[in-house]
Image (spheres, rainbow, N blue to C red):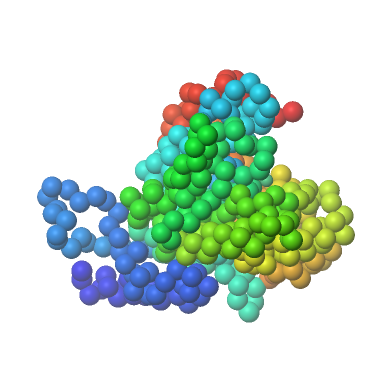
Length: 390
Ligand SMILES: [Zn+2]
């Protein structure tokens, strides 16, 4: 490596540290960061034996991190035959869920298109003057993207429908439990371990170790541990310990955790009193066990403000009560292909786009900025046509 390149890398790493102290503490030392930043973006070829040091890519500051697209998913369908068996929630799954096969294809296409995962805390950081764009350094030609997953709770209604049933920690890694023919299997049956595997194979898909934002409600516990919402029950202590271990392992491996409200409430329609009570309950039952968060992912994508960008939240009672409870990063749903982030003295607000059956089937053209071949993503085991949202 030339000295000038090393200087550039060091400057980049220091900028990362200065701009994002929290994620540096979370994700490791400067040298670890450098190791990640300098990971080669291409596989070694026959001409370049693996024993030879690989030329590090030149890192470039992302000009406008507020243009970072944010895409989101729900629990992934492992077995479409069970999800689409003609009973129960078939239409809901077809509309709002993504299959494991589709998710793997989406990751591959994002990667092939030059996208790199960054954290929500990377795109905007808090300073004395409020939130400002973060300093993100990526290899030339690469683009940042954020992924999140909602409702990582494994609700009762999904049992027997071909979804994972909980997250577990094994040798420091987060895996899923999945029931098949009366047996409990442990493996990569949902977004977290599948994403972990992909980043392991393609380390340059992750900036500074960032993976995804994992959002949980509270009324059914978290990560598949029901008793978090049943203080005093025989399983309470054990479920709390297991859920806390999952949260710790998630954070250690580059995930951020978000509140998705306690009761999956609609923040647009709910009164201030209802929002305050719901938020306090999430903090009491969930946040106190798995760790607090400053990220709120709105259920239904329903924002406290119906005014779209660039209208501000400021001076609204709902915002003030959420701010007082520690929330700074707010994400709703807005499928405009142009990503937007609103930075304010007291908050960051970002639009997200769903990549589910509804979007993949009805609006493939609107995903061409993210995916090179959206039609190829749609799982042929889905019943077609995917219904319209009624
Ligand atoms: Zn939700």
